[in-house]
Image (cartoon, rainbow, N blue to C red; front, side):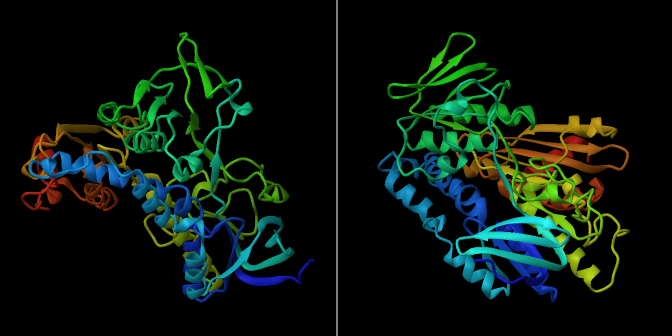
Length: 476
């Protein structure tokens, strides 16, 4: 059955957090909006990524934290996690993979919901294929593509011939695997390797780099590697995986140095790519399968007419949920302004109409144990961009930390633009350092002069005292 055309001011393809934000903010600005979703409203983050992965990790982190504090350590009985309770808690945070609550939220926000797979078929025109047939949509103002990303696999012989886990299976498995190999020691690989190891799986983490989290500060990868090994994870770094094949009781992983690993399951966590294969972008002159290049207002480059926007993982911007939501809010503001006759293409950096933070002040947390929290540029990135930088790096040895956990281990660093004496980046590694990063994000985003930042007195005794120690080490 083919329905008659439906018209809305804004049509959003993809109802993950990014798409939800774009649609809801457009409605709040007085526009009509519909979100098109082929799977569950709430997307990858709600059901297979952010929420279930952090729920899997949290129980182990709480137990480990108790063991690091005298008095609590002696009271921890039994010493192992209750696997069924951990998985049940994870399932609850994933809403048991049912999206009624998300649909209710969308309807309450005034956003229409259309189930099906949306494809661009022309300027402001989409076709949505669903269980009940095909619907044609027309956007009076704009189309916003928020289709997210999909897992990608490296070209390793045999890898496409065996059954592997992606991050979806890694966050939703209902049984603890006897053994698990994780290919890729980035954020997803590190987090899920630790989560399943703490639940009793024999985990092997494999990567071609010298340390986990290779794109971050070296001390971050080193301290996280220590934490993984302490939880029983076997690390094979600088590894050359030559072949994957099926074995009698799982898989066989063969390496160039002659080593063989035989896990029950293999999770591939080597990255994700923009989900543009079947989005219809080729009908407007773009290349399917490639990330959408967007300008600072979220407009897709190479498409005339100022009607096609994109935000989140489907673009060439940072692939982080919070940055996707940020970009979505700005896209909605741009669309609303243009609908009201206001042109914003000359809007300055840091305005309501530009995604400036995506280039200069992206925060990120790795919810491993120890945690990694960072924002902005690393020292090497800053130098490559032409800044004259100075770095300060020190152990987190403050009263708040030693009270927080016996034998607390952590490290912190800042990257300073010496010409302006403002922060370009900050990084922290240690238990519960995630709560430090927003202060760094404010300092980087606001370009707060170090002489003024020195007057932001940290509360005693908290781990935030490390901010004072960093500034003192700089010379203030």
